[in-house]
Structure formats: C-alpha cells, structure tokens
Length: 219
Length: 219
DNA sequence: CGCTGCGTTGAGACTACTCAATATCCGTGG
DNA sequence: CCACGGATATTGAGTAGTCTCAACGCAGCG
Image (cartoon, rainbow over all chains, first blue to last red):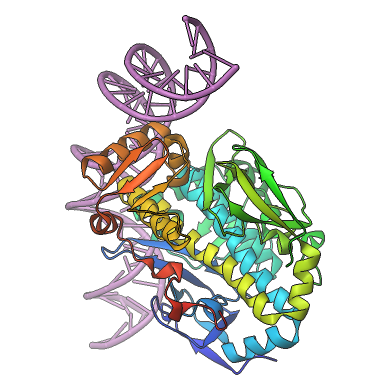
C-alpha cells in the first residue's frame, strides 16, 4: 500500500543510526531488532525490542533526527515506507493516521513500563516482567507454540535491556530457572509457569492494549 | 479552539488515575504536574514532568485506559480538550493532527532519555541530566530568568524521578551543590555552571527537538 | 507553640558491579 | 569429521553504589 520496497538485513546490523536524518520509516516484517542508545564511554541501554509487525522507527517521520539507533538481532525483512507516503496518509486517511499514531503510543506505554522496571523493580522482578511482556507480545503475532518462542538475545543483551551487567544478567537468569519459571536454551525460551512468572514480575498486561475494548476508536 | 473549558487544580491532586477511562485530555496552561506509576507495595516511579504548555495526557485520546496517573505538583490551570474534538481535528486538519502526534513523540523521546538515565547513568549523572533537561524546557517556555527557575519537587520526589531513595537523593543533591553546579533553595533552582552541569550529565539537547530545523514538517 | 512535613546525618546491610578465570558452545577451515 | 578460535555462559572474590532504618533539626502552619 504505502510500501515502496522490501529490504533484508543480516543479524547485528544497524538499520538506523542516532543523529542521522531519514526520509523513510521501517516496518518489520520478519525477524527481531532492538532500539538502543549508547553513552560515549560504551554503556548501552536498550530502549525497545521489536518483532514481526512492529513499526520500528515510525517516529522518525516526525522527529527527523534520530535520538537512538536500531539494530537487527536476527536476519530481518523490512518494509520501507517513505515519509512522503505517510504524509499523504495523514492528508487523506484519518483512520489510518490514528492507527499509526496509536502504534507509537503503544510503544510509549511499553517504554513507561520499562521505566518502572529500570527505576523500581529488582533485577529479578524486572527480568520476569520482560519475559512476561515478550510472551504476550509474541503470542499476539503467533510466534509462540506451547509456551515456547524464539528469544534471540545473548545474556549480555538481556542485561542491556534490563539495565544490569552481563554477569548479573547470568545470575538472575539462573534464579528464574531455579524457580522453574522459564527454561532458556540457546536462543529459545519456554515459559514453564506463566502465573508464577507474572506474580514475580507484578505483571499486568493492560498497558499493552490487547483487549479489543481498549483498541483505538476505529480499529 | 478545541477547548471546552478550563479547570483549576490544587497542589497534590490526581487529575488522572491509572486504570480509568477518559473522554477528554488535559492541556496544562499553568503550573507543574507529573506522571507516575505505583507498584502495589508503594514504590513509585515518576514517568514525566510537565510544565506550562505540555499536553499532559494526549495519549488517553487513543489509549483510553490509562496506564499511569497524573498528579499536580503546584496549583494548575488546565484546559480540557474533549476527545470528540480531537477526533474532529484528525478528520479535518492533517497539519494540526501531525502537530499533536509530534508532541506525543517528543514525550516519548524524553522518556527514552530517562530510560538511559535510569538504566545506565550514575545517580549523580542522572540528576545532572534531569536538571539540564528541565533547564532547557523551562527556558523554552520563558520560565527561566538569570538561570533561576521554580522547581517544585521535594527531594523525595526528585528521587522518585531519578529512581533513587529520598535519602540518596539528598546526598546526590549535596554533591551537585558542592561542585557548584546548581543552587537549590526552597523550590527554586539556580543553574550556576550550565556547561559543567551538562558535562557531568553527558547532556545533548538534540532529543528535545528545539532546533527549528528539527521541527515537524509544517510547524 | 506544638504539629507535621521536609531536609540532613550516621550506621550497617544488600544489591549489583568489576575483574578475572574457566567452561561451554558453535561455526569454520583443514 | 575433527580441531581450532571466537563468542557466550558460568563462577568466584572483592568492591562500590545505593538502600533501609532511625534519629534529629528546622521551618511553616494552624
């Protein structure tokens, strides 16, 4: 529809770089990627995790100069959406515009939860929350079977998302395993006890707006 | 224009509460307020700080069910904007719609910086970053004179924003004073050495999109 | 003029960090 | 098909940053 072309990325590639200007946005068709921001001394904070269906940098449409980077985790298929097409959509299709806006607001809601995790939750709670969230989101796009889904992050990368060191990431993961909440082998996660996981996390999925009643006006 | 009425709030009042549905949004005309999310056991994370000119909960237009609360810090004057009017705007005024969308994206950009602060910066760096950001934002709306501006947060509230305890908040503030970066008396801040403050913070204001060149397409 | 909220200080505990060594997995080339 | 090398995972030990608890000072307000 508004897509000009489709592009493939190898794992570990930056598709978007902080400080740069862009004239098109990327819609993730397949694969995983993440947004992050680096400090000059090398510290890195992951800002969001994206899977198939996510509009990875819709905000570059309005913000122009990126305030963070986007990198692939796995090989990714991406649909390119020129900003001109988005402008046209806002001129002609109010419903669609609201949909797009809505998707950036979901992103923001997720970021707020991550802020709570970063600022207030213990590493264990926070990590449990992360797995709970990804479980729900992956389920939504049919990436989960039998509680099992691909989760292509190294322990160090998980740590960057949760705001802890790689070593501590390893130790917290061991706690989650010891409590039989999840099983993690290679890049695959199995949720063993969702209820207990959510209890540890203090997880409440309403912020994801999964309930149709919470969907945008004209979904 | 789209405003149905104006409302006054006393300090320390919730204008919006988590889990509730709303049919109107609040545009802050005067005063300070903040968004926050509480954990069942009382831990609280501040998600955003708002001053005159900020659209405090524009996202409730699309999200409907709030994922966090909004509370006044000072007495506040708020313009009420019914969601119906916003819908009408999206139908008839694409430029205005993009403006509104843009403002939610700025919010998101600020939240991303806060995430970096919460996850990666030391308490001292993070707090310096907070003061730098507020200084820029307050300057933008002419709330700063001679490097001095009102900052109506208690030390405990500053701690909730930065993700540290009230006691540690006090100690970090003392360091900022000892380094002669800021002077804090009552609820007023004076920036003594902006350059040094930004250096400690690792502050780069581009994410605020203050540069006219970075403004949205039809600002 | 005595609450009550806020700021300040001290002491001890705990979470998470760093450094560094070792183990394990996996892809590649021989 | 196996050996090697690099990336990833795991472990231990000591440290730094931040937390909690608790006390105390100070100020504004009723």
